[in-house]
Each structure stands twice: as structure tokens, then as C-alpha cells.
Amino acid sequence: MGRPKQLLPYHGGTLLDHAISSASNAGCAEVYVVIGAQYGKTTSASIEAAVHFVENVTWYEGIASSIRAGVNAAISRNKNLEAVLITLTDQPLVGTEILGRLVASFFCRKTLAIASTYSGTLGVPAVFSCELFSELLSLRGEEGAKRVLLRHQEEIVSIPVSEAAFDVDVLSDYEALLQR
View 1 (cartoon, one colour):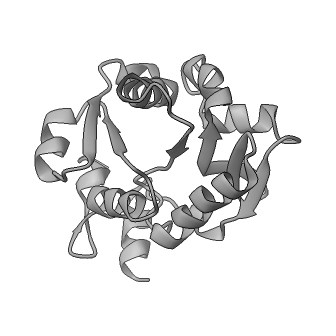
View 2 (cartoon, helix red, strand yellow):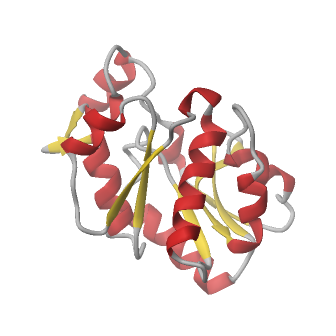
């Protein structure tokens, strides 16, 4: 897109502000924001008290390095962490209500994971129990959290989240978002 999509204007803030607010208001005790190549530009644009910015210095390795950076940061701050919610800034239609439903479902059902289903597949946003942390930390390259979800699809609970199918990857996606 020629610029960090996290900083695109959205609802009086940025896509990043929206994602942080959604996670914070969904029942997440702490929010970890993993940022790679644009770390300096992005962290200065959005500051909140319960938000921890995590620099992914190996961002060039792919999405797996961001997952590892976030999970490692959360574990290092809280050794008794029960679960992590993985969500993406570029899924702006996924808001507080949806994330809250995923988090509440996880704690009610006590399963390995609560995953979103959309476009015929499992994906994020998803809540992963601590039993899956080692698998998330073993991801490499472009392997995303979906790989872990698919590995355990018979043992997890899935919730339809059609809003997660829309993501902002190119300028025309962003323009379509603004038209909603």
C-alpha cells in the first residue's frame, strides 16, 4: 500500500487504534501489539496504558515471527497466562462484540481454542489456550495461526464470524471499507 496500513484513518483514529480498542474492550487484560518494519512510526501514533508494543525484529521472516514475538512477550509478563487472543489490525469489521464473544466462549467452554469460521475455513481472530503456546512458538515463515487451528480442528470450537472474511490488503479494500 506504500504506507503502514495500521495507520490508515478509520472511525476517528486509525486501524490500529480500532484494533487496540476492540481487544481492550473485549475483556483482554493486556493487549500486545506486534509491529515489524514500521515499529517507530506505528508506536508513536497510538499509545494506551494497557497496551504493550512489541518490536518484531525478525519481521522479514513472515507472519510466524510476529506470532512468536507476541506470544513470547505475553508469556514473559505473565507466567500463568491461560490463553491468548490473536487478532489482526487489517480485519476492521471485527470489533469489540465479536472479540468479546470469542473470549467469553473460551472461558465458558475451556477448550484448546475458539476459532472464527469464515469463507469455508478456520482462522483468526481466535483464542488459544496455553496448551497450544508451544505450537504457536514453533511456527516458521508464512505459517500462521491457522496451521495450529487446522491441526486441532476436531478438538476446538468454531464460531461463525463472517466479518473476518473482509481484510484490508490493498488500497481498493481500504476504499471499500470507507464506503461501508
